[in-house]
Length: 249
Image 1 (cartoon, rainbow, N blue to C red):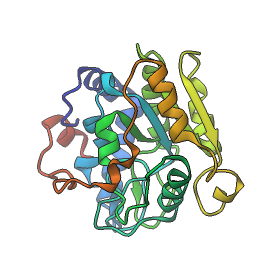
Image 2 (cartoon, rainbow, N blue to C red):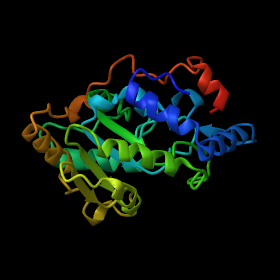
Image 3 (cartoon, rainbow, N blue to C red):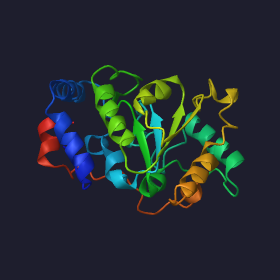
């Protein structure tokens, strides 16, 4: 299905792929990709969040809704865009909140959040594909059931995790996180429509690090996005396993 090295994610994805709902989902995505409009992200990047953040390494989960729906934006990580793409408004607001919360943070001009993912920040959308120009077009296709299983798996994580839940959609989806060991931080969505209602002052980034340090884990270097790596590029579309080809993402 995807080029995953983490055995936990491999097992979860393989189990879900055998379910009837997931097979129907695969058929719908395949049909959409054969339609007149592009589907984002590219097939090799649909599960990129799991590729960059192995289960054992997860510290923080930032739960988004569905991928960006304009050309060149979506790269399989919630809120993230390739380094050479203009910053979307929600990500600009995330950077504004960071600048108010983390000493030394200055909003970069690039929006590739891969460096967070590599540190253990799972950048997970609840819906993993979208049709160009049609936000939420793939909602209710079955992705929510799949990511619900991912969240249940995270609820059983051996380490306490932080869940950043911005907006009602994320907060509703994370209702399955019931283990009191985990820290759930909620705020309004960083969209320009709602960010002014408290998002900028939420302090979630410093609170996440404080919690992680209390648990004996390393803090997240949120400033790492200010130092983009030269090899931050979208995954090679040709690198797919046969299982992924079978499901025709």
